[in-house]
Image (cartoon, rainbow, N blue to C red; front, side, top):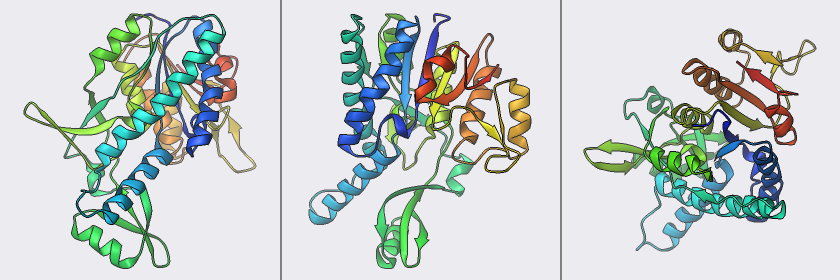
Length: 310
């Protein structure tokens, strides 16, 4: 693909939490995406879905409780729903922002399935909390169904899911074709719909894929030149929260790995971003991974700020 192809991974703040918040947040996000387009970037977008998929999972399960004739919605279905409604707001906001600037570029959301390994070690140690608060009786019922729960407060429980690494993006060629045609593509939302391959069939899995890993894999497979991860901080830091905090500018993949191995980055937060960036850099040439916040997306892309891994 073009050397100017950038995969933009959007974090929670780019989307908000509630439906009204999402409408507002995606309008602000659309401005940052349009800035990149005006800079000549060929943009492919991925995004998180934590609050959204949790809301959908809770709502569908409450509906199932109230209507016994309906089955409960599996996580794969909830993930698909979140991709649809986040993509709906995001693509419309980007389209409107581009048109307001006199730019016509089609924007499309691709429902994206991502294959996981059923033997991934993550299934032995689920860590992603999902859904509503359960009482002890409900938690026991979940465990009897083979699900994992964790106690989040005294007498309060919630389900936890595994976060296996993504192995393959099923709709990759569709995404590639649209991107090469100059369209803006929204794909692999929420890390993708987790699926297992069984012969020619794909079966939804009860798991959550880390968005940063899926974004990195998407960037690798598209041979993008930039992985732009937008999060809550302008720059990644060492010794965060201490008197010796140090902000990182441009660093090598080797240095990033050294800091990672020194446990400088929080698990489930900055760590997967650094891991995804390193993998992206090391599996290609002339690549860069940039980590910054939404307010500095364009400046980060131009290497004026942010943490840049090369």
